[in-house]
Image (cartoon, rainbow, N blue to C red; front, side):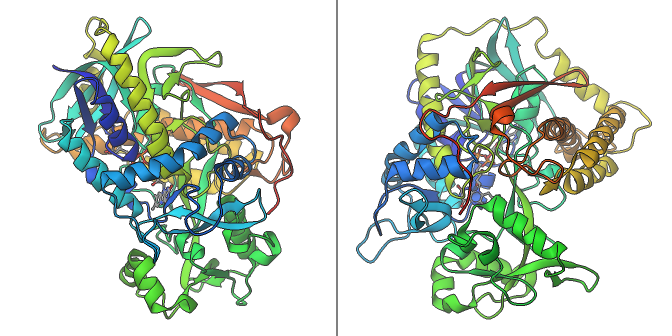
Length: 577
Ligand SMILES: Cc1cc2nc3c(=O)[nH]c(=O)nc-3n(C[C@H](O)[C@H](O)[C@H](O)COP(=O)(O)OP(=O)(O)OC[C@H]3O[C@@H](n4cnc5c(N)ncnc54)[C@H](O)[C@@H]3O)c2cc1C
């Protein structure tokens, strides 16, 4: 058994920042499925939104308003205001910690345009995204990891958390599988913070890494913690055709243009003011519509399934200096030089707006009345403090990591400085041990690959960019059936060390639970809002649906609830750009 005051699960931007802060007040360890600098934050390309005003006038309240409008008014406005105000301090703080931002000629942090970020409450695009070429997330990870090492945070890498210990309403630690040895370990703590990232792997075409399997959300939902707004999943408009690998919005921020098969700049039809810099949900739907109207470009000759992102006019030097990774990816994966040819793109499953509900200090909220388990925290993409509402604006996730990851870590630090170790339930490791034994026992079940494929196809076809009641009813039935069949899945590989088959099965179980919750929530919400676009209910209905969904698992049943949205500053309006 290991013992720490504060345990952080996940070594992405949110987890590392929280660890740095909690580590100031108590003995702190990070458990991570991956080596820290391989966390998915490292894939973030475009930048961090903060109203520094370095290249043109900007204000935090413009940023907060854009965030609320971008989220189709499902954003909690108190959380968005705090995000935008603290973003400025947070970016300078990262700079002071050593992050090598790209610079203006005058030596200030440079800023570029990004979708949905505007000046003066929607007048025109504004340059708000602070960036380090197109490697911003990579730089965040390197900076924060070095700071954690310097400040004595302990790391347990390739340790996979499979259970959380909650007893008498207090969180007292986790159970983790050490991939290298196959052993289970109990980590005891005064407080635990989940920062386990996203769940894009429930879809077939996704920008997300293989490790993004929603482990934290699933572990907690099985303990009766409600998940918030799980029906809202973002499809980024510009994934590489056929692969889903992301082409950052930074390409459009630098002036890239989307064109259909006729060469038309089709966003003129859908968002005449912001054009290619409209929010992601709108552009993803516009591409989908162009393709359905047979104005997409022919891929393998059988379907019209993509459009072009044209950046050639930016020229080789801008692309080389500001978008070097994008140029490299295009050459490597598509054999295309973006300085000469347009990039074939199609929407890709990208970001979970919903997740583990928290207050502004990262404390997990247990139910609609706001009661929290003592010592249980969450931050980053797996959490939902609700700054993104129904649709996240680009650059706002990285801000969330460094604003709310830091706040959660600070609160946790104060908490562990005063708290005692909570009691653990008798036989705290029992359920996890039984689960592992069952996975490795004899059984008829296959290895789970077929279930994973069916889940991804079902989610992509029926709970994707456009949705309708009939397809989602069918999807819920299919997912329930897949969860039943999952109970029989067994590991073919029986070895102890580096048994990645066991890991994949555990991850599949998490994804199946979350897919069922997401599909059930999406079916229930009979309106269209942000990324949740229903053909059978095309209108937003504030009277009935301006509320957050809560959902959790009780055995095989998804239980639903709701809670109010904070709309204390801006009243909902029609969302046009
Ligand atoms: C290609 C791409 C580009 C993006 N670009 C931008 C951008 O420019 N700007 C922006 O704001 N956002 C961007 N995003 C979104 C943003 O990068 C992510 O939302 C954010 O980095 C998530 O950070 P995180 O700390 O919450 O999680 P992650 O960085 O995903 O880290 C999760 C951590 O949890 C660990 N973990 C997971 N499960 C377990 C487990 N069971 N046990 C132990 N550890 C576990 C992992 O090892 C990892 O360390 C982008 C996303 C993608 C996919």
